[in-house]
Length: 420
Image (cartoon, rainbow, N blue to C red; front, side, top):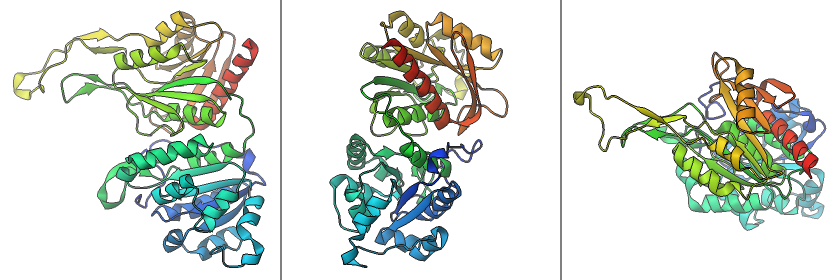
């Protein structure tokens, strides 16, 4: 179970994301609450959905009610909260509720609840409603790290994602028993964004093969230390999530991240720039769209010490050499019709740097991020970004990474349509 505390997992760093809430106005949301410690955050989620103009019908499991009472949710939402299928059998309430709702959100979704949903069990009101519900389903897992990483949980998530269920991945942070790791319920605004995205129309990337690289590479100095960067992988995860929602077949090539990609993507784990180069180039020929969101090291130590470097040996002289340029090689190899997107994290003349990358590496689009000052994109929940192509610059100031991902993929869809 995830520990109580501030929602989210980036240690509270950066301002909260601002999801597009237009799809929530007038929406009818079924809110399933299962029995994790994070159940109290579902009360905050209900209030936030109501503030966005949605109607909310809570559905608590028996374990969920042991954490937060039905009376709390009834008072917050102004709706009666049924206890079980047997309150009024003649009303066939699970079918009526499934027909009423437009989206089903389960937050928190414990490992047990995920397993029941994946298996198609119908042993309480929530799971009966889920089986009868024909609309979009969103689940937000929350549990201890070991449970989140267990192969059974991963298999259940993959099965659910294969059925079209949207997974809002947990954050990394403090858990119960003083542990720290992935498993905390996602940020409140990430949960709201998940519901809003599920309600938004369109699967414009259906049938599209799309590769996303994400996270930060690590270049070893010795068996213990490495040269790295501050990338959290949140931007890449947002792109993967949005691409899956739009129906794409997604491959995620992930270096070090603080958040996990959604289970619906095929995941390839890498660590160094060389490994990322090899993995991406091995996949590139089969991809329709490639989005290189990873923060890849430009340099690596020329020599890696065989043993741990010791203080008593003195300050080592570290000589660097260039790493392979994956994006440039993709530009050289790109096949006709393939869409290629790069990212530029700049500290000087931002726009000039992005335009140089666009031209030199034969890209269709560059996502430009500012990385200096108080609004650095690294690790934050939102960013100041610009979408740069050969003719235009579209500014996206202070928006959530989910919103940047959505606008980026709007542009990708337009490029694909123009070439079809």
